[in-house]
Amino acid sequence: MIKKFFISLGDLFYPRHCVGCQRALSQQEFLCDNCWSLIERASEPCCQICSYPNSDGKTCSNCVDRKIHFVAAVAALRYQGLTQELLARYKYGRDQSLRAPLQQLIVKALQDKRLREINFDAVVPVPLYPVRERERGFNQALPLAKMVAKQKNVPLRLLLKRVAPTSFQAASGREKRLKNLTGAFALRSPVLLRGNYLLVDDVLTTGATLDECAKVLLQAGAEGVWAMTLAR
Image (spheres, rainbow, N blue to C red):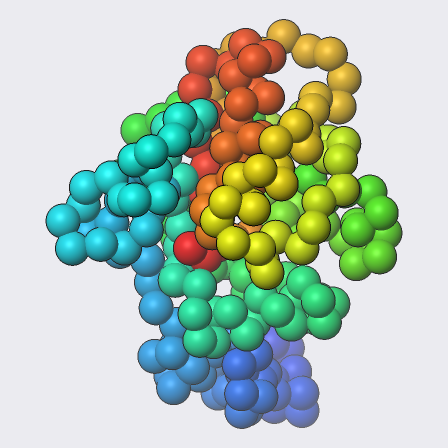
């Protein structure tokens, strides 16, 4: 009761604000009703491998003509509109006030039927190249992976490292992305893996990053690799 009193008192003098439009909020939320309406949840029908939205739920053109090393990649949200804006502020604008809201949003992807019945041995964040991580000041995938590991009650393991710098993926076309990531990841240290692993990143576009990471884990002995992202 006392805790609730001080929370209410704090909200009175330092009201919460919507992270989307900065409007003052009367409830303990991070988005106002209008901004919530601008967030589109990822939903079916979609490609069952990469979650690209389509009309029939069949394998999409992005996946049908290539070998993919993860079983499925799921996402919480569609990468458009306000979701895209919030991620840009978080990654490139270093707006750390968005860390907790984005953590709360990504765990919604755990409700996906492709993940619900899987017993994971560990959650693995997708790493950044060291130079880029120093420039940015943080790896945006790590806090998301920490929240996912907490929700799944499994260990977080930093198994991977990025061993080759790559050009800016968000601005690259599909073919360049696929070629750009070949051989870009490796294990941080020699290890023999067993069981199932869940990769976590912020955005899935072609799936090239997640695919290369999954390939490394499989080569180290993982039986299966799945992936989840905040947005697709």
